[in-house]
Length: 491
Image (cartoon, rainbow, N blue to C red; front, side, top):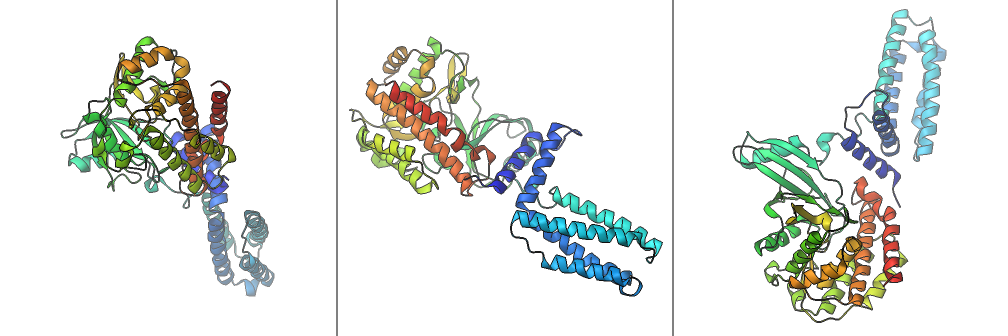
């Protein structure tokens, strides 16, 4: 279940990133920032703020009783102070409702006493003036704390990357004080990793680049979800002549950029042709050919045994398995991860794993390197030419039909499938029968369903605090289940 205090903290962090600190008076942005700060303070730091306030109040009550000699000049006020101090000592709220009740009770008791102190002529006017100033100052401090001042994390404690932090990191890495960050843009999407485009100018380092960065902790920890596992796959594909990005360096020690490890790549020219849900429009014959020949070329690459063991999905023994064995191994590894990590595994997901593992196709052929997330959302196209295939975090060894089933899910409705397969075969790929394709279409949706639920689970069990992953297992589950149902309904 979603944890309300942590959810509020994640929402507040997201609002600071999106809205920033420069907000207009009485604007919607101001209302959002202030309300989230107030709620986070109350739900996450309420007891801390309450204790600070009551400790200060108790010390102040002792001070003014002695300073004003109330036991001598106003015994009734001295007695009232003793009663208030006793109320403070007895206050030990554990639940939020108890804390709210205790705070209301203390505020009313202290407020009525403050009124008497400031209006009692037994106390010298100069002392009453001083009391009024002290009460105003104390209330200002209490209000600031209730709005989060001093208890909510500030930017210096966050692991967010800013242009200023990136500049400092690059200047240190290249020992070049002339480096300037001239463009900085964090891309939306990416539940597993963060992607930032940036451009720099300097004497020792210049150009246009992409930073692909892990979260502090992976949403799911298999395949190539850690950047140090993704990097060698990208480098191997690039070295084999496939249009993978050009990796410049992978950094796992980066004190000036706290947070997840990252890979810096040279930015390829062009833009993506769609998103994870499909192409941005009807796919032309030229783009159909581009997609098909690129995937065919990938599946025709020689086996990359030099990769060694990177993950459960990339290891030496998989190259020698049959396609049925390698597919069974991969799906079972996902099933085991799901069952091990999910706090609330769902019957539908486990039932579908049982179905698939009992119906794995057994075609002829050898395992190949798969991208695992093929679609126009990961194709960079410039003037009709493919310049890079990006985001290799789902890369694994397996049946080529695995990638094809995924393509059928993401862009299949937008292209002429018969022509796609014709171009795929011409590029070296082998034909796939409808039942085998149907199997991998179901698997593609189930894998994404599992990944989305595991992402939310990572938030719910406290491993991650990012608001982007808190909801996906809930909001996207109906979409993937509906997609799976449609494959069953229209084989």
